[in-house]
Amino acid sequence: MAHQGYRQNMKPRARGPSTMAGDPNQLFEDTSAGMPPSQPGGYPNQSYDMGNFSVNNIFGDSVVSDLAMAYGSNLANQSKEMVNKEINRFMPINKLKYFFAVDTKYVVKKLALLMFPYTHQNWEVRYSRDSPLTPRCDVNAPDLYIPSMAFITYILLAGMALGIQKRFSPEVLGMCASTALVWIIIEVLALLLCLYLVTVHTDLTTFDILAYSGYKYVGMILSVLFGLLFGKDGYYVALAWTSCALMFFIVRSLRMKILSTVSSEGMVSYNAKNQIRLYITMATALFQPVIIYWLTFHLIR
Image (tube, rainbow, N blue to C red; front, side):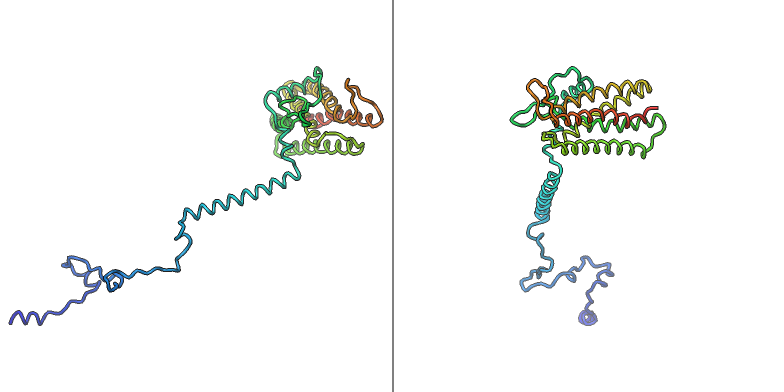
């Protein structure tokens, strides 16, 4: 009877999260509350959210990134080809590469020829299969490597000279660079205009004229160096030497290209047009010392 009364007084305990958390005598935690509803077979009900379906579920992130990189690379190559095509319309890169095909041996010989041109005999540019040899194979071939490097060296040397005299400023250095660049552009355009007006049919290109005009920077560098080392006397001595050498070099180099009829002995057949062309050649040569002096005299004090 006592057992029956005890059973009658027992009440079922409510199961829930609050009871489990507050009962210190409970041995195991009831996790059935967080389980999804089961299927009749006792397995949990599995469902897929079709809203999150994407290409990455099929191919994976690495495949998609590879495809994007391939597409971007193809697009970049097409853009590069279009840019190169537009550049070649205004500046032929292949022709420009010819003027930079130099080596150390050529540079040394060319600098010696610019300073000591009086003993040089053969001034003709050699050809191979109707194409002129590259500068590294022919010292008479014009190049743009020496003029471009000499231009940069002249700007640096001008900055050093102004700094020694405590007259340096970015504005003054920029004025020196822009003035030198403008003068050489004017010189090239003037020579092209003169050749056009006298109807000279020659293989002398714009790059050739730019190369021959740019060789004056070598004389400018030597004049400034001698001026810094030995004062104004050294400057004028170097100016006279480099000017005479450059004029001789210009006359002998342009003589075969501007004058139309040259005999096998190298004697020019003088007629009215050839005399005009000879005057153009001489004027180009005589213009070099004027520009050298104009761009360097203010650096020596």
